[in-house]
Image (cartoon, rainbow, N blue to C red; front, side, top):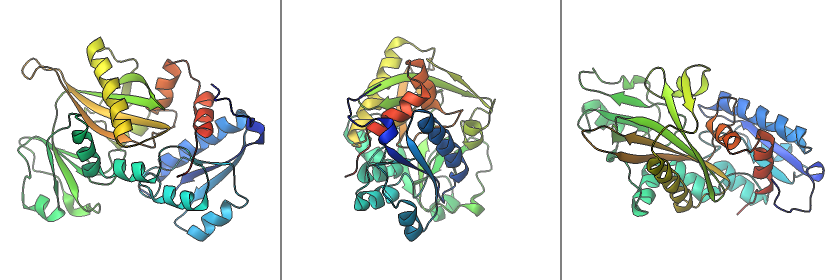
Length: 311
């Protein structure tokens, strides 16, 4: 795992940004700690920064300037283009995608428009306000409601036949994206640069891969590689790479899919979204897929550092 760089890890100073102020702060702290530990073990000089919503404090924490910023933030402020724009202005190379790609991917309706323009299949959907949701069903049931700009399944509801409907009294996310619910199997693919690594099937015990299922040990079974037909696996990898490229992403991303393999509907594969800051916790999917491809966690995070750049 080398890109031919002349700088050795020992001479590179890496600042790991973690924490942040989004709903995914706790997960980011775990991701950041795991990445910082691995980078130190690989020989990098690591500084750990719990990023707050304070630009002056962040600038002070990044002085003297590191060689690379490892962006381990999740959610708003960390993967929506905000911190990327700040680092671009400061001229600091950083991991993962740039400002434009990060903002596009985090804005689910905008990303969906990009995917559809690239010929990638997505569930039918519509952007709705909270007022519209309170008036009744925006789509025929069953359907999914998700915030237009959040990650990690924060604020996601599945509305089925016979349900009373979600309680939106604590909805603080602004507009929502309502989409056709695709019954079937949950699949995900990590893209590493120009390579789609593998396909993992997720089998949450609750039937829904929500925040708890993602980050609680034992709540979800990961099957890697997924036990699916070769043609579907190839299609998943192709769609994941095309989505990564359509958004203009770089570094590491993860694309999520639903595969409806029912006899009634035939085989239908749908792209749901692309995550430009995949989790790097002990339960995360991208490190698991990298390991299945023979890439250790230390090699993965080192590769991310060596690919860092700013726009």
